Structures are given as C-alpha cells and as structure tokens.
Image 1 (cartoon, helix red, strand yellow):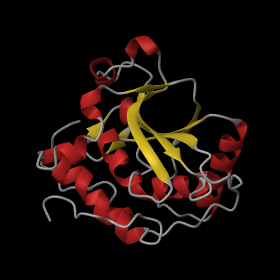
Image 2 (cartoon, helix red, strand yellow):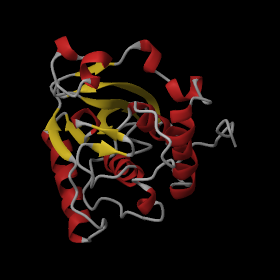
Image 3 (cartoon, rainbow, N blue to C red):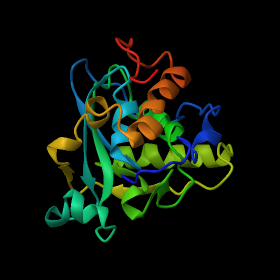
Image 4 (cartoon, one colour):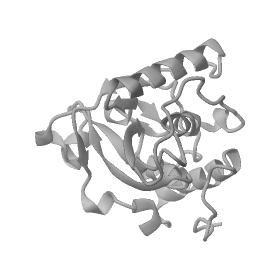
Amino acid sequence: MAFSTFAHGADDAKNDGLVLPLPAIDLPAGKAGEMKKAVFAGGCFWCTEVFIKELKGVEKVIPGYAGGTKETANYDDVSSGRTKHAESIEITYDPSKISFGRLLRVFMAMHDPTTLNRQGPDVGPHYRSAVFFANEDEKRVTEAYFKQLSDAKSFDAPIVTTLEPLDAFYPAEAYHHDYAARNPLQGYIRQQALPKIDKVRKKFKDEVKQPTTQPVGE
C-alpha cells in the first residue's frame, strides 16, 4: 500500500452521505449455517477487509489475490502492477443473515466504483474495483445492480467496476491477514482503513455487528 499524507478517504469522501438502494434482484436466502463465499476487490485489501468484517452474517474475510495466475499470486509481483491480479477479499458469509446483494450494496457504497484502477492514494490495475463471480447467478445479480445504480444515477460518474469470472482466489501472505487490527498506529491504517469502520457503522448501523471496541486512535 502506498503511504500518503493525503487526507483519509479523499477519493471516496464524496460518497459519505450516499445511500444506495437495495438490489432489486438478489440471490435467495440460504439455510442457516450454510456458508457461501464472495470475492470482491476495491483497492487496498487492508481496507476492504476492515469494513466487510463489521457486517452481521459475515463469518470470515481473507485478503488475497484474484484475476491472475498462481505463479504471480504474491505481494511483490502483484504490487508491480504487471500481473492480472487485483488485491481482493474472500468473504465467507451466512446467506440466511446477509445476502449476496446486501454485501454488494455495502461494497459499492464503501469505496469509489467510479475511479479506474485507483482508490485514494493507491494507483494501479491491482487496485481496481472488481466483482469476481463464481457462477451465473452472482453474475446476473451484479449486472442487474450495476444497471440499477446507473439508471438511478447513484454516482456522479460512470461505474467502472469490472465483472470478472472467478478462476481462483489465492490467500495473501500471513502478515496481511487482520493487518489493520494488528497495526492500528501505522500511518496508512490510521488514514485509510480505520475511518472506514466508523463510516460503515454510521451508514449501515442496522447491518453491522454490535461493536465490542472502538477503533484505536479515537
């Protein structure tokens, strides 16, 4: 991740007050305890991991790489911007508590889906906004939601989030897992990741877990 002196959330601050509609089309609710997975990319995986973990029904979030080959699925290669990977998160969730569409809604509201290959100070194709679909149902719901948001002019610029088939997800190196929780005083985390906890709690207060602690630094 690029360390920056930019004000945190500079690129997505314009979306702070944005309230996105629920998807008109969604996947059916699953049986309680029957877990499913989704893979999204929205810039730095330290940041996306932070806010998705806050949601009720999310059991686990793993940072990693999607879109490229196994041989280049490592931080050094991906950070070069020369692989096809995007920094991504694999979300394990209970569809009886949170649907794929609701996950998608939070994801689209919590990053800027209108900036090509960029989130905040992080620039490059590995920081692109993407949804990696595992099946045709996920693809159908995502396409319909993008059209719904575009028709409603929910954003002041076109959505550039890519919709890509999920060939494989490769977990990132161990030191990336729970990085924000383990490094709350690091400059990038204080500027970019931790503020997203407050933002998701305010924007989706009925959908987040009961917080046990406040983000470090408050």
